[in-house]
Image 1: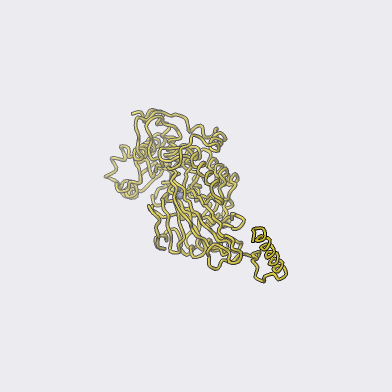
Image 2 (image 1 turned 60 degrees about the vertical axis):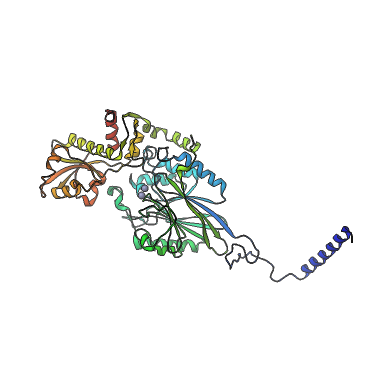
Length: 509
Ligand SMILES: [Zn+2]
Ligand SMILES: [Zn+2]
């Protein structure tokens, strides 16, 4: 039989068969208009064989603390912008998230009260941000301003207004990212970190924590699932107190100080954490992943999840902490340059050269210097009325935790002392002065005694009253047992005293 004949016969058979099929349609023909079925969970529809997995890549930042500019210890937002843009191009579904503490910690961000960071997140297309404690460092009105310009929601299911007993207006409980075939629900919460915020900045709000928070998150999850959410991400501004070098399984007990593992029993599918500035990838007793990528722009938590559109099952395909140190160094990035131009009037003061620093000064040195300056400033204004015993308080330094040799700019002092804590004159009972400030074991306090304080040190009358100058965070902090008497110039903070010190040549030797 020649080839032509063979083809003709085949064609005839085909016509015969199709004709037959049209006359008697198969009763079980593939039809998945009402949804696919994947009983074996192999990622393919049992009826039509369609591939059912949607792959989503989450990139979550935590505790960036306004680190817009490059520093010795971390790259700036130039590199981060490029990295995120490349991720967006390379993958089909990318979701950018943050677990909070985005604003406080650099001159660029502080001088714009976070607006430059919020704008950057808009430009990059962030889907949501959980509130961190440091978002409260300037009180509530800058949060409201940031909320007006943010094109993404601030999430905190548990921040309540004391007067109305309602959730604060600038936060949502959750948001949904609609990817077409699937929906991702995102719930956000602030951790139990109320006391780490200067009390006068949060007097109108309170945080629901512990079992109250668990209840809120479970109810929100039920609501999101009922609305069609296939996968639920929990953004929590709290975390484990230590880093882990490799993926670690943790017990419910290990998480108990900040996370109720019962949430992983069907309510949340993935947890991104923050606040403790640690690096880890954990899996809890339900196999739910928890990630945190360090702090001060050290890294991004990246998780790739495959979600089955037929049965809603999900699987973490990969989880990693991408260190920002590994990014390629960029000169400029148009988005960052554009933002620096937009806010040039506010941020230019950061570049002012104040003086020269003869050698690298470590964090301890800087804190001690601030303590001395607190004491001197207090003596200058109140010294003739009060025998001031001490200046200083809990003055922590940030990253990078030292003042580099060379030109000193306002920007450098801003990253070391970003807090708008005022200088406060307080009174204190002798026994409390002894236990809270003079105990040598308590090195969280950097103190300057002056001559009078040094004389007193070993000779304190426990019932006597003494006068100290501390920052407003320490003065309000209950356990310090301080009574406020007066405040120094409202707009003078630690970095301003240091700026004057630098101008006066204080760092030249
Ligand atoms: Zn932080
Ligand atoms: Zn925090």
